[in-house]
Image (cartoon, rainbow, N blue to C red):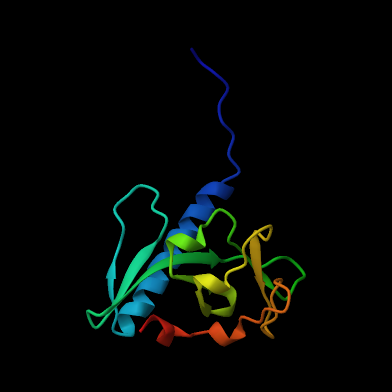
Length: 143
């Protein structure tokens, strides 16, 4: 039986490729900083990697990558909907066009009806009264 062919815009493939690239970039940065890394072997694990500092501090890390900014906006939106903050210790948001990394503790990630974090150059986010700029390049939190 020949059914209709699936027509893809390539969005899903680009999204997966961008996510994997972001995971590798974040992993490379962690290795540069002296962390050991472990990658989950499950097909769709709830975390992207495990970072280990000096054989004593272990963190489960979720990585979200944003490679294309919203048009005519000075912000980048990072989708966190679908993640479970109980299953990771830190979310690292990698904003490609700003070459920025935000190491955010899971307890500070927006939950409830919020599906996205929106980062602005001045650090304001879409979360009410939540300024995540303090977590920019906060790799020390993983130690």
